[in-house]
Length: 184
Image (tube, rainbow, N blue to C red; front, side, top):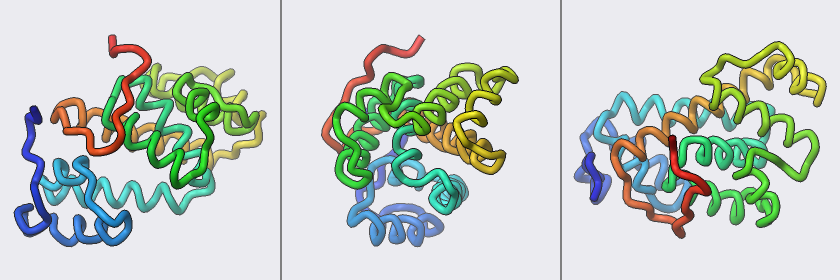
């Protein structure tokens, strides 16, 4: 059972959240429960949508962002985000099952993407306290400073949604995927 209200419709959400939920509905064709929960705070929904919009305009690309989302959801043992991003990775980003499995394990079958995913996992696990060698490794794979910032942004965005979903116990509205290991 959820611990934070999940609005049944856009019309039952706070007035200040309705435009954001309508935008999500136009973009995705429906409003996933994550957004219905975050809609409790119009300010938080605006922040989430703004951060997602900014991330989508970066240079990492949708496939790498999905890889990072899967890896971070595993770090945080978030079943909701694993379910949502597995669905998105498979159906929108067109990642195959082997790649999705690699991503969930902090890896990638693409050498450059592997560096981004590995670095994202390091950032998430160390809460940003990464070493000079870890930064040098992701740079050596071809990522510049702007992309390093975008990787950290993706970690923050996904950690935020992981935490919201775990606190709320958001009902999964995608084909369910269980974390490989439980959070410590």
